[in-house]
Image (spheres, rainbow, N blue to C red):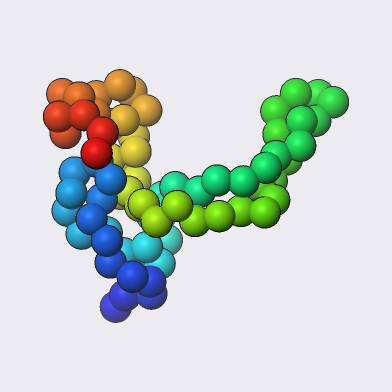
Length: 73
């Protein structure tokens, strides 16, 4: 059952349901720098319309997107 819209994964191109828990969405917004470092939650968040599977994100975080997917789309 789809909870969101289905789009092509930004990495592998296969369908990904944007409403499925664990799906990653590319967003833009603002974060406030904390005194202890890091950032707070995103405010004025904007959905950029791209999504990815959790497994594709894990591969990309390890630098494997070029080997597995031929680069970012």
